Image (cartoon, rainbow, N blue to C red; front, top):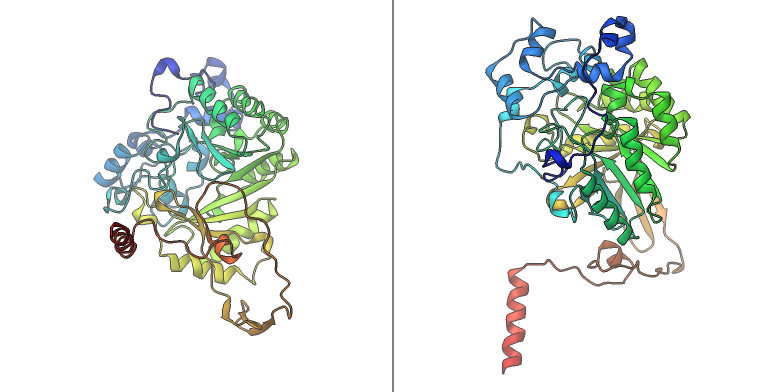
Length: 436
């Protein structure tokens, strides 16, 4: 969610993502009935350190925990809290949702907005970084605030939805840029919104003829699976093609409730992908990621991305060396089918976008043969074509500077850096010659 969205109370679009106060009917419902009601979970989230103590009387609450909860929003659904097996950071669920004093460690290279989303926001709430895709931030609300969140600067700081004027600005921008055919609806978590408000947003996006695919990023199947109702799935299927990316990080999140939620979505014809984040002390062992990927495939969720943790404030204790991610990918290749292997990516600082980081399988290159390494360590020689059968296709349209594809296809000879003392000296030399 942008820093400007929801800045005025009068501008906030009315929605039902903020569940009403408990009614007498709610209070008289059976415990089992309440547990199945997603609105009850939203109303009864753990929001303060005092709530934490109430739910977990034996929890050791240090000054660091209190300080982290004061700096970054705290919310845990009763359902997700029930998955905690041990009240310390050795428990992956505990580690991902309970504030820790380590969040206050603040090295200079961490940023509030490390991906510079705000810099790529032509109108409030809409991030346009890649030519054919845009990210629409529709809410600052999540059911549970992950301690590793890349949008800690805004998520939960003030729970609100995108104001109607900002939604109209975003749709006008999308209509004026028909090259954008893929819109990712994110936040916050869009599925914490009421179904009626969410449908209003999807219908508004579908009014733009050039939008081909709508994707939704959500963690509700993991932290609030009760939200994935038949009513919600039925509404979503009206706006196909709709894709959903979930955010499972650990096998302990693969519960029966989560499986049922994903089944409802898949049965509605919605393809499901999963975007995990590599987190120290949670899933930074190859066997854990393997178990997670196997479980996801059984639930009809395709492992999509394994993200390196972003350089965002408050997450330094979660970050792992890049070498750990490469080690995990090396382990998975050959043990899992390609369908179950995510792509390990670094979302580059300064808005550089997603960069795949892989083990090296090319050992040597020559005009006639390429030596490749298999996952089990065997070296094989792959013969190159005996005739020059390669013909570069036409260069993609657009106004961007040359990229690596242009070099490989012969469309460009070099990509010089934007700033270089050597190039500046050359420019000065040329200017001096022209003056003479």
